[in-house]
Length: 346
Image (tube, rainbow, N blue to C red; front, side, top):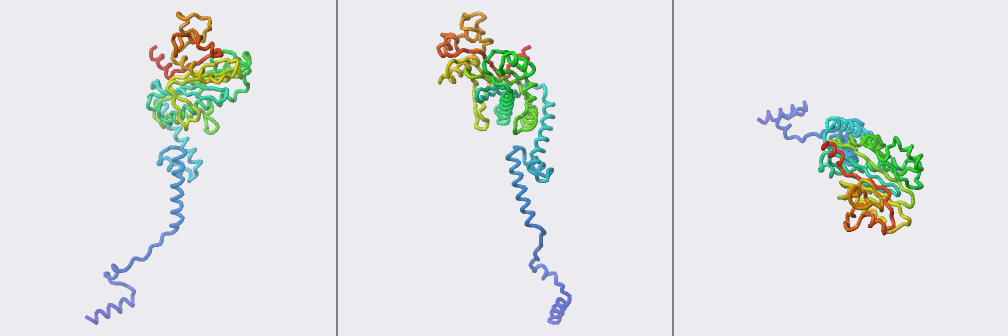
């Protein structure tokens, strides 16, 4: 037995081989992985880029990862790629959803200096109208309309009442009235406006993105803007108003009104008077301003100044306005979805 053991030791020493049992007992040799350090660093970097792209765009992790892989990790190009893909998907969805009724939505009011804009954007359900993504679309439309208004070349020196105008006859009216003061944009004209300095394309492109994200039919319905000179004031009111820190100075609701007033002096209560006049327009839905000489009743019920004052029906609106030192010149009223309801009735 000792001879066999000696022989086994001799053979191991000569050949370097090991018996099966001794192999199991041996500690495994360390395995080397090439470039392990750089690969881990790249993985951490990729994760950071993925999180950054996700936070910036709001798209899913899967889509953000695909965008970074497609663009070789270039964050800016990945963002552009995502927007283009989302737009394609949005246009495709918009085509499928076209024709579905859009009776819900929001009115947006935005005021900056002597310029005020009122916009309406429609969707299918009230649920979507309460979604921040939809509200951001309304904000973009209001900002696009404001930018359009502010780029008009002339500043008004006086206010001349006119019909709400489209860009087609705006130049002619400016020549006659001597100032760019009020205007109206229909759905087609509104959709064609630039999206803004920080967005590519038009408002129509932003609409397609929103449709792709929210999955409902939507339309940019209309917009009105007013720019007034010194001595005039635009009162405003939005019913059911809601504001959000993330929505700039935009006020949102289901009804909105602008009331253009002339005043001989700058009064401290103008904002309050303007809000009350806007409330009256929203609540009483007048068709024309009328005059202080109009008698109440009959056809005068559709004339703003001869209507019973909403907040005190014992007097007419004209009787409320006169002591305030302001004259009502014009107004505009938006009711969300009113055109859709009329079309359905017909």
